[in-house]
Amino acid sequence: MTQLSPLLKQATPVVVDHAKGSWIFGTDGEEYLDFTTGIGVTSTGHCHPDVVAAAREQVGKIIHAQYTTVMHTPLLELTDKLGEVLPAGLDSVFYANSGSEAVEAAIRLARMATARPNIVVFQGGFHGRTVAAASLTTAGTKFSAGFSPLMSGVHMAPFPYAYRYGLDEDSAVRFAVRELDYLFKTRTAPNDTAAFLIEPALGDGGYLPTPPAFMEALRERADRYGIALIFDEVQAGVGRTGKFWGHQHSSATPDIIITAKGIASGFPISAIAASTELMSKGWAGSQGGTYGGNAVAAAAAVATLGVIEREGLVENARVRGEQLQAGLREVQSRFPVIGDVRGRGLMQGIEFTTADGRPDAATAAAVQQATTKQKLLTLTCGPEGNVVRLIPALVVTEDEITLGVDRFEAAVAAVSGAVTVGAATG
Ligand code: PMP
Image 1 (cartoon, rainbow, N blue to C red):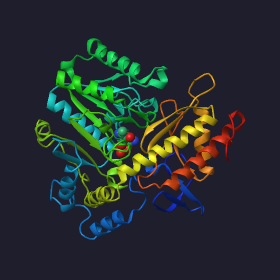
Image 2 (cartoon, helix red, strand yellow; image 1 turned 90 degrees about the horizontal axis):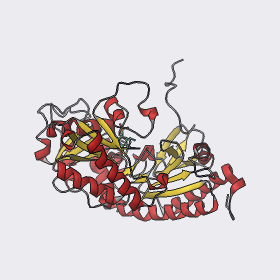
Image 3 (tube, rainbow, N blue to C red; image 1 turned 180 degrees about the horizontal axis):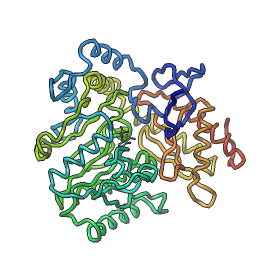
């Protein structure tokens, strides 16, 4: 009998029959509140009627109109629509299918445009699983171990992870900036450095918002040395953090932006955007691909952007995110196993630590499993595996957040009831 690869690790035993909004209906007859959204993809909720209608209509017109052979109207419409939300000046867009592919396109462009070899990434960053993207990924050695040699020319600087270093945010930023400048002296000279690649909030690396001052320090050095600043908005973009782009919590703007995941509510499409001037420095013919900018995915992306705008979903993410974080902080006050609660908007991480402050992956894993029993779907993340992440759909309601927090607390109580402080529910 054929089976799925044993190398795929299942976070839950759930087999979905169908889904709607924030809810997944399993073949087991159970209803699960979905705070995973396909790892931050189904931004408008599962099967939003407008997205379903747009995709259905497009399937009947043309499914695949390979975009370097014949152009199709959904892609032209999407490019127009993206113009309304892209940072000023980033007026040239290239489409691919996955986040990894878009990351690679961004790196290729930065190297060609600067004629420099090296990329600086930040510890804990996740940029994908294809070999070049895995070479840029430092969110865990499981993403890059065992199949070396990796792509060369990648250098890692510290990320200002205040909680891990036991520092306040300002001190963590000062430390990380100083080490970045030291990297320029010790490993990659500015003139050899093509790009900085950073997430506006670490995703798979632990749900850590990047401090605005750090983003701004990168912008300053990018300008000073002619380095391309690339923001990987694959997970933090498209409203997730309560701003349309995750980097908009700072004043820094990118030279190249990467988007995927939430942009099409579940259809595979990704993109990079840069100024036409920068994009034109790439080599002609260096971009392309069979499936990139697929017509059905592009139609779904246009519909997604419409829904986000009409339903005020960026603002909903901000408000519901505040509610979620406040609820989680209350849970934290009752359970000492929770060392840190953090995040922006609907991208919240709960870091589990032992009594003496060490990462506690066992408890995080047990809580994640326990949430499924409470009919709440969650995921873990972080290089140590000790962070539970909550990624509700941008359409999530007040009642669903309240229910999600209650179920999360019940799961924590089930796992660590013996060490609760004060009254715990569930
Ligand atoms: N960048 C970031 C920030 C991501 O979160 C991810 C996926 N988790 C990727 C890149 C890679 O995307 P994909 O899995 O679509 O290749």
